[in-house]
Length: 239
Image (cartoon, rainbow, N blue to C red; front, side, top):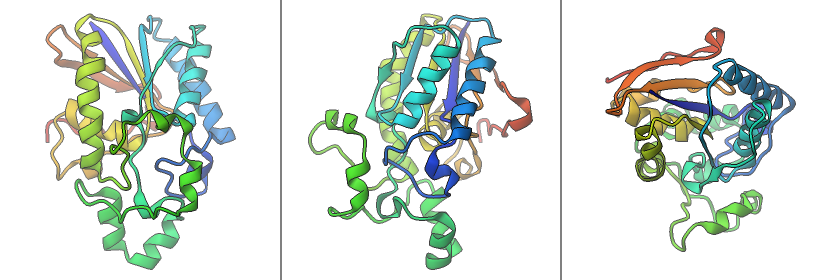
């Protein structure tokens, strides 16, 4: 039986400041570092081998992953892909969430933040936040870099990558660790748990709390649970 371990990075500096981060390459806060360390210790208690690891091009996810690997005395060897990046928040990037909600109204704010297929306006070509994007994004093929994304857009890059690069290891009964982001993991959970377009807005992914998904040999989910039950969120299954 294979285990897939999904971990949203620990709290970032901009998470703490309640800002839309998206593709900006912001590091973990002090709390986020502790959350990453806690994640590593929780995973260690499973007493399993982590065979393959994946993360995005963003340092908050990479640092979370390397911290977990260190806590488990594992080699810092992992796969990095921009397709696991956080959703691109377009022109909302860098803005304070509460201030933005007051400015554009709660209804429009909810559409941009939680709808399935409504992206914010694209980021401007001269936006100062573009200089804060990860240098690892230079690996993205010409013409594929987004300027904004809905959750659907995020799903459409995460899932093909999962099916091509990650799913094969589950078939081989290996244990896989993915350190990524709220929306890239929401997209993956939508696929794995067959969550409807209407219900996906209810799914919350907590920072620094590993979600374990156990599969049988036919890729069917047998069991799923958060390691820190005190901070667990509801998983919506097949709705």
